[in-house]
Amino acid sequence: MKLDSSTTKIRVVFDASCRTSNGKSLNDILRAGPTIQDDLVSILIRFRQHAFVLMADITKMCGQIIVDKEYTNWQCILWRDEIADRIKTYKLQTVTYGTACAPYLAIKCLQQLARDHMTSHPIGTSVIANDFYVDNLMTGAPTIEVVIETKQQVIEVLNKGGFPLRKFATNDPSIIADVAAVDREDIIQVDDVGYVKALGLKWSPSLDSFLFSYTQPPVSSKVSKRIILSHIARFFDPLGLLNPLMVSCKILLQQLWKLRLNWDESVPPSIYTQWE
Image (cartoon, rainbow, N blue to C red; front, side, top):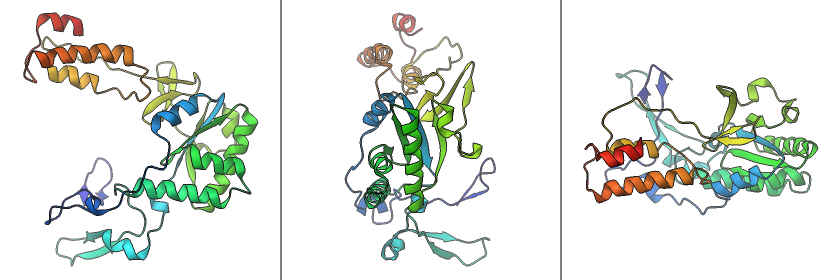
C-alpha cells in the first residue's frame, strides 16, 4: 500500500518483479508467452498510410480479463484498514498489469474474440486482430465511410467481450461525431498546434503529423557527459524521424567516452561549442 496525497489517497501495489526470500519473483517463474502482435514500428507506419484514421484505447484492459481460479493464489495482496487490525488476504481475480504474461493474455483474448465473430463482423475482426498494440487501437481506411463502419464493428465485437473503448481520436471529426465527449481523447494545445498521445509519440489530428517538442534547459556554464546524455535520452523516436539530429549528438557523446571523462566533469571547450 502506498500513500500519496497528491494523487490517490490509497494505492494497492502488486509488484510481480519483487524477489522473495528464495531469490525469485513471480515474473521469474511465469511463462510470458510468445509475441503475437506486430511490433510498434509496423503499427505506426501502417497507421500513417491511411487517408483517414482512428485511434482509441480499451478501458482498463487487463482488469476486464478473468483469471482461472486455479491461478488466483499467485495474485494475493495483504490488507488492513488500521495498523491494529488483523491482516486479511485478498486474491486478485483478473489479469494483473505488470505480470510477465499480461501482454500475451490480453492480445490472445482479443485475437480469440476476433475469431469468434469473424463471420458477422469481417472488417472489425480484421482490425482487432491486426491493428492493436496491447490496448491501443490505431487503424484507418481510404474513405470516411469505411472508417465509420470499422469503428462500429470494432465497438460491437469488443463490447461482446467486455472491452469498452474510450479516448477516441481521428483526423476527421465526422468519424467520431456520435462518440460522447467524455470518451474522446483530450487535445493538448501547445502554441497553435493541438496533439494527442499515440503510442508514446505526439500526433496532431489537424496536421496529421507526428510531432516532437523540446524544452530548452536553463543556461549553464557547465556542460557534462551526464547533462548531454540526459538531453539525448529525452527523445522517444521509434520511427527514426530524428536520426539526422540524434546521430550527430551520439557521435558527440562517443567522443566524450574516448576522453574518459567522469559523469559530472566539464567537457572540453571544443565539445562545449559543438553542443551549444
